[in-house]
Image (cartoon, rainbow, N blue to C red):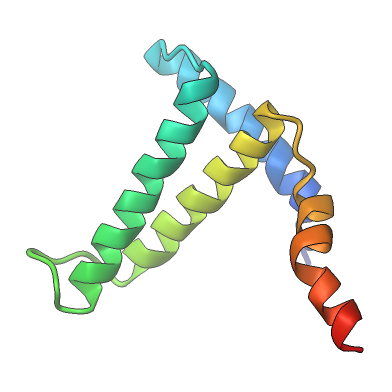
Length: 103
Protein backbone atom coordinates (compact mmCIF):
# COMPACT_ATOMS: atom_id res chain seq x y z
CA UNK A 1 0.00 0.00 0.00
CA UNK A 2 1.35 3.40 -0.99
CA UNK A 3 1.83 5.95 1.74
CA UNK A 4 -0.14 9.17 1.26
CA UNK A 5 1.70 12.01 -0.44
CA UNK A 6 2.35 15.08 1.64
CA UNK A 7 2.23 18.53 0.12
CA UNK A 8 6.02 18.66 0.52
CA UNK A 9 6.39 15.34 -1.36
CA UNK A 10 4.16 16.60 -4.15
CA UNK A 11 6.04 19.89 -4.36
CA UNK A 12 9.39 18.11 -4.60
CA UNK A 13 8.13 15.73 -7.29
CA UNK A 14 6.58 18.60 -9.26
CA UNK A 15 9.90 20.48 -9.17
CA UNK A 16 11.78 17.43 -10.42
CA UNK A 17 9.29 16.85 -13.24
CA UNK A 18 9.32 20.54 -14.17
CA UNK A 19 13.13 20.42 -14.40
CA UNK A 20 12.92 17.40 -16.73
CA UNK A 21 10.24 19.09 -18.87
CA UNK A 22 12.16 22.38 -19.09
CA UNK A 23 15.36 20.56 -20.05
CA UNK A 24 13.65 18.42 -22.68
CA UNK A 25 11.96 21.39 -24.37
CA UNK A 26 14.62 24.04 -23.76
CA UNK A 27 12.36 26.23 -21.63
CA UNK A 28 13.89 29.05 -19.60
CA UNK A 29 11.79 29.53 -16.49
CA UNK A 30 12.07 33.06 -15.16
CA UNK A 31 9.80 34.57 -12.50
CA UNK A 32 7.13 35.51 -15.03
CA UNK A 33 7.05 32.00 -16.52
CA UNK A 34 5.82 30.49 -13.26
CA UNK A 35 2.83 32.84 -13.07
CA UNK A 36 2.02 32.73 -16.77
CA UNK A 37 2.19 28.93 -16.82
CA UNK A 38 -0.14 28.81 -13.81
CA UNK A 39 -2.59 31.05 -15.68
CA UNK A 40 -2.34 28.81 -18.75
CA UNK A 41 -3.15 25.72 -16.71
CA UNK A 42 -6.08 27.47 -15.03
CA UNK A 43 -7.40 28.38 -18.47
CA UNK A 44 -7.16 24.75 -19.54
CA UNK A 45 -9.10 23.71 -16.42
CA UNK A 46 -11.78 26.28 -17.25
CA UNK A 47 -11.96 25.01 -20.81
CA UNK A 48 -12.38 21.39 -19.67
CA UNK A 49 -15.01 22.45 -17.14
CA UNK A 50 -17.00 24.33 -19.79
CA UNK A 51 -16.85 21.43 -22.23
CA UNK A 52 -17.88 18.90 -19.57
CA UNK A 53 -20.80 21.10 -18.52
CA UNK A 54 -22.03 21.49 -22.10
CA UNK A 55 -21.03 25.15 -22.38
CA UNK A 56 -17.98 24.75 -24.58
CA UNK A 57 -17.37 23.55 -28.09
CA UNK A 58 -16.06 20.05 -28.60
CA UNK A 59 -15.69 17.37 -26.02
CA UNK A 60 -13.12 16.05 -23.60
CA UNK A 61 -13.01 12.85 -21.56
CA UNK A 62 -14.36 13.02 -18.00
CA UNK A 63 -10.77 12.61 -16.79
CA UNK A 64 -9.85 16.00 -18.33
CA UNK A 65 -11.13 17.94 -15.32
CA UNK A 66 -8.98 15.93 -12.91
CA UNK A 67 -5.97 16.11 -15.21
CA UNK A 68 -6.22 19.88 -15.54
CA UNK A 69 -6.83 20.33 -11.80
CA UNK A 70 -3.63 18.34 -11.19
CA UNK A 71 -1.76 20.65 -13.57
CA UNK A 72 -3.06 23.73 -11.72
CA UNK A 73 -2.13 22.29 -8.31
CA UNK A 74 1.38 21.29 -9.37
CA UNK A 75 2.00 24.57 -11.14
CA UNK A 76 0.85 26.46 -8.04
CA UNK A 77 3.30 24.45 -5.95
CA UNK A 78 6.06 25.35 -8.41
CA UNK A 79 5.09 29.02 -8.14
CA UNK A 80 5.27 28.79 -4.35
CA UNK A 81 8.71 27.15 -4.48
CA UNK A 82 10.01 29.83 -6.83
CA UNK A 83 8.97 32.64 -4.51
CA UNK A 84 9.74 30.99 -1.18
CA UNK A 85 6.11 30.58 -0.15
CA UNK A 86 5.38 27.76 2.28
CA UNK A 87 1.92 26.69 1.05
CA UNK A 88 1.07 24.88 4.29
CA UNK A 89 1.94 27.93 6.41
CA UNK A 90 0.08 30.23 4.02
CA UNK A 91 -3.07 28.07 4.19
CA UNK A 92 -2.86 27.91 7.98
CA UNK A 93 -2.56 31.69 8.24
CA UNK A 94 -5.11 32.65 5.60
CA UNK A 95 -7.74 29.90 5.74
CA UNK A 96 -7.41 27.71 8.82
CA UNK A 97 -7.31 30.70 11.14
CA UNK A 98 -11.06 31.00 10.42
CA UNK A 99 -11.60 27.65 12.14
CA UNK A 100 -9.71 28.84 15.20
CA UNK A 101 -11.78 32.03 15.35
CA UNK A 102 -15.03 30.07 14.98
CA UNK A 103 -14.16 27.69 17.83
